[in-house]
Length: 56
Image 1 (spheres, helix red, strand yellow):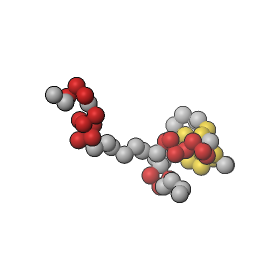
Image 2 (cartoon, helix red, strand yellow):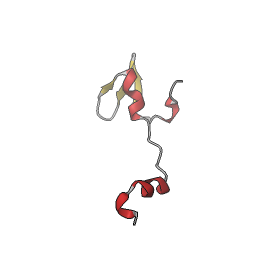
Image 3 (cartoon, rainbow, N blue to C red):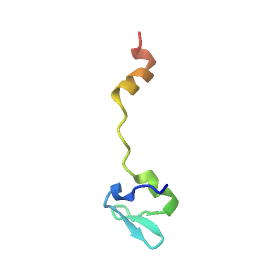
Image 4 (cartoon, rainbow, N blue to C red):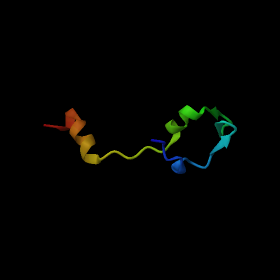
């Protein structure tokens, strides 16, 4: 399944076979572009369940 690159910020533009960050000028390889997709926020309840110091 291919990742949904429509959610990629506009600062990342296609640059030949790779991608380029127009803000920093960094060239990003095709296989690494999914690392730059926005992360989904975690569920608050899941975070609290994992925090052992809050469970008493």
